Length: 245
Image (cartoon, rainbow, N blue to C red; front, side, top):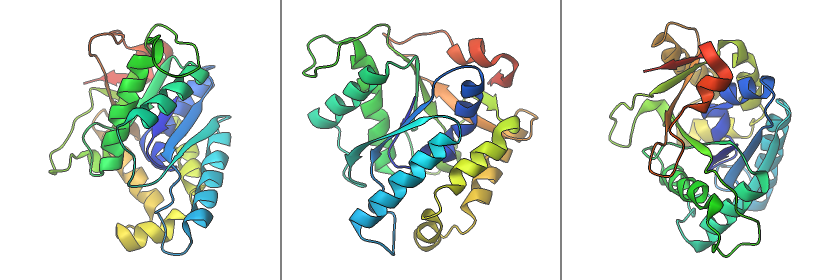
């Protein structure tokens, strides 16, 4: 399961790996905390939210996945009771073995707060007295942090992954999934000064690939704090496609 701040974050960060996991027999679920309601210069909040959630659903369908939105607003993702309970509830409903989320250090606070919320929600998957209806489960899911955008923290410092996944065979799928988010081209051009956002994604995956001598790769770091699994589930499932740094 991937849980991210905005509807197109998974496509930038980890859908090559999710596609590989789907081929290995795993069910895939992608969720966004927010509706993507601020990512536009053209539409109203209601209009762009509907567009972006539809784009995210079509993207997930390309790998036989399911999309969910927790219906928060862009720029207003808070680490509070409501978001923790709702995220934990979703995790308990899906009962994932592995969870992917945003980097704890990134250019945007929505990403960083989402990362913190998901960490707590995974840890809380087995907490009995949390005030939600869904039954708790054990063990805590494996938790993997994706690369931050451009592989940099907010100070421009490079963040090196400890885990690389060779996604060369899935780049065509990753590209098609990101292309589903067509509404974002004008927004990214105006706000981020990025026109060819798909080429931008591919260039970054190519950069990570060069670091391990493959064409395209995605980078991750595993959460290894107390109470979380210490072995690496990705190695067990994807074998030689996983390269450790």
